[in-house]
Length: 198
Image 1 (cartoon, rainbow, N blue to C red):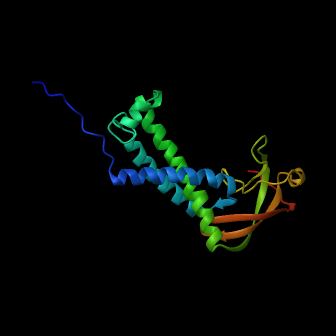
Image 2: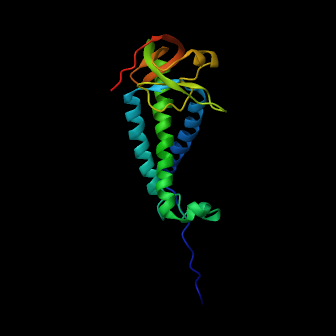
Image 3: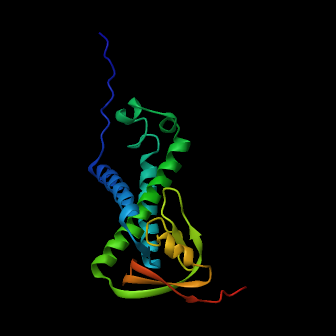
């Protein structure tokens, strides 16, 4: 009499499911944020985004290891395994980086912009134009001093306003301000400002 070995079904704990659901919800929120947000995150929102992104990125990289939820040990993954899924050396860092980026965007831009919309007070912020960028299918926007990489539509402007802008001119932003950022409601050109040379 022979006994066939049967493998135990792959089990996913409730905590693992919760982490995965939060990450996929974060992905949807990040995509939505890119289309509707006009928020410039504050240093606090950026720090929170980095912390949450790093925590979830490490958790997802851990789940991408051999034997994890996103590895060949999961029959659903193994059934449609591609090159990326079969190779842990590639799967682990890419999964971690992808989830880090998604969760950073969700917290810094999305949650920060939402918090500012809810609790922000009217405010004005003046910054200096350093150039313009964008084009094609993306919006045309200002590049300004003191604001990092902006992935949403916070600094998008009409072609008329962009045509009148020159590097060194001030840009006056009006909107709501909170500890989590600045939601831009309107912008106008200010007087030229001399650019300091190092």
